[in-house]
Amino acid sequence: MLKKYPYYIKSTAILLGLSLLSYAVYAMAEILIPIAFALLLSILLNPLVTRFQRWKVPHAISIILTMLIALATIIAIGYFLSTQIMSFKSDLPLLKKKFGEMLVQFQGWIQYHMGVTLSKQNQIFSESEAGIRPVVTQALGSVLGGLAVSILVPIYIFLFLFYKTLFLNFLYEVFAEENSKEVGSVLHQTKGAIQNYMVGLLVEGAIVASLNTIALFILGVKYAVMLGILGAILNVLPFIGGILAVILPLIMATATKDGMHTQIGIIIAYVIIQFIDNHFLVPWIVSAKVRINALISIVVVLLGGAVWGISGMFLSIPFIGVIKIIFDRIPELKPWGKVLGDEIPNHHKGEIWSRRKRVTLIKVEKEK
Image (cartoon, one colour):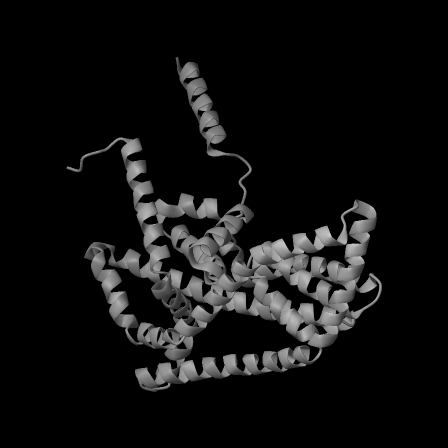
């Protein structure tokens, strides 16, 4: 017979375990980040591998063909973006000159309206630049480090797909044989939901990128395609990404156009696109069952950034979506799945239980 411990002992043990797990995840970031990316991508690519196998293609060759198709797609997108970036690089001197003129006008406005001298402003800018430089260096370092370890991602993807049956058998054998049907049902539903979720994210991103690009092209903003795709990528980060996505075209429009009409048009267009994304694309394409509420989204993105940097910020939302999928399909964990979601009930359980208790008492009194 298992010994029952008080709640405060259980909660302390859980908090201690979570703290140790968080430290381990932070300490092993360089090892775990490529594994995390590879796991998500292998789940996404698994249906194509399965299709090749149905066509009697050997398992290893099916995986290699699938990875080559994925690599070709990434190279095509990268080449397209690189042409945009090279075009942007040719206009960089002109943009620097325009930003310099804008900075002089801005400093003059501050001196006239706020009484802050130019020398004092330059001193503040110098101090701010000194404080920002380490942050930028750290961010670039994490990006370069991510590029370095990305060599491991294809290897991990191949191994995850190659040993898929081995991992599935392990999950079945961990649980008792009488639970095999339940385990199989949970694995099947979770795999399908994760694949639909990841494909939905890609489709949603493609639609958002198209809408961004069309809006910026109509408004006459330079590098509309590059900014539209960057906006869709940043859109993965809730709230923070949406703000950054609109700031970039605003800066470009300010540097290349006179007046404020274009900037106002960009803000209106992006507000409409965000409304379409949040109220139509995400519920219909990504699936409402894995929508995460705003509070959890912000906290998870900040925690992901604190633990794994930029990679953690991008991985946090897909992984919390996967965790919610799993929680929703395990009866003991359904309350945790509900608290992660954005579905707000009309009444809390306390009111319902109190009402039931009052009804029961009334019936008892009547029977007496």
